[in-house]
Length: 264
Length: 292
Image 1 (tube, chains in turn purple, blue):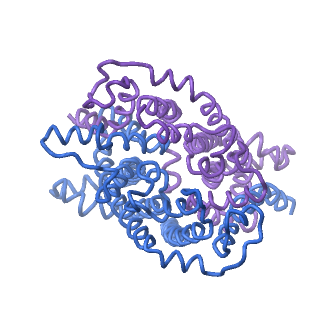
Image 2 (image 1 turned 60 degrees about the vertical axis):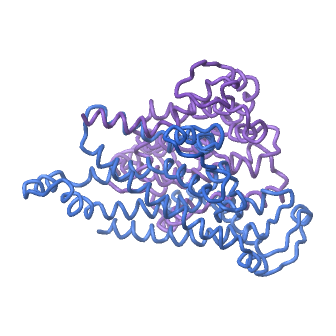
């Protein structure tokens, strides 16, 4: 009985997602008629248009998201190791700065970055977008990696030190492998946030040669607001990473959501 | 000593990054807000200092009042429904039943979708002529509503979409809070003959208060900065009826052919002040709970 109610509620919650898929399969000729709950004349014309027009955007999104993951982990993992295990003075202050950093509204960062990038002449570059996108993920990544690395027992590290391992060796061959769940969670979220970013892309890369998929969709909406099957087909494609995450990495996702808010 | 040096060495990249990618843009933002920039001086430099003129201009602008009221309404209404629906769903899933873990995971989907995807899907659902919502209204004999193009409804529409996006976060956090309440508490309450509703109101809800407070404050911080959803659905319009501080700041700086970076930065700095106050409250609360 509860299962039936649960399925019903979930269906209700996910209805907009279903609607997106439904519209993506609807032929243009049916678009202005009364909407039908199922695609009566399913067509792939929307997806064909995506393949024709959106591939460069898709590639850029992938590049930006992967670049953001690499940059975020490279910055966050060593710092988290230090905060969790080497415990230098001033770490509480740094933790506080990171918490506050997460709360700064994106629009403010975007305007600030725009000012800086115009001054340096680096607007409309992919790496500039990667750098800006990483600001969404780095504070979160440091905080979550710190909590994962803190749970590596100190005795293991002491044993490594006795065997002659320096801090770098301990980091690379003991702490990092032991906290790989944290690394995966941090990587997943940085990927997802960079992939989904619209604000930084719109402000810093809207005239760029390589633009991400979010701008591709935005331009679609702006230019040809008739072809909603193509718009929704692009949206479906843009939703693939999130869906894959839910299917293959559910527990990391839940870990990521709660670790920010609730201490176990 | 060596360990301490190593400790700092591992932090150097992060600290350099925080200075370059947080402090510097934020400083630039403050600088923008106290100078009289034009497009020309933005590129070539040499904008004169104008002190608080941009702020005075922003506070005197009638849009400021609208944006502030809209921000407050958007935030409070979003939080109320996200929290109550999220809590109801968490209580429902907390009982545990066949498929409950899978369904709970599926509930997360709206939260993980790119905002442009959710926003454009809602925009099409709410489309005046071809949207499903108006078609459904017609079936039950009601007239169409101009969800996105009428000044009376635009704020309602973007709030609805934002509530939908925020429910999963509330669900997950409140669910994990419920899991941390010992089972015996509920059993004892049931033994005392309390009804389900009584148990919730006098036992579960009070025990959940710390988690609720954290969820709401974090939700407040997140909702204040919502930009994508509103901008993609209505661009803050029509005629400013769904403008918040975040979209107004963007509109001033990037929305027109003639950017006004000074006022845009000034609005942004007002927003950051509100967000940081909420953020500090959150941090204080969390620290206190860690100590408790």
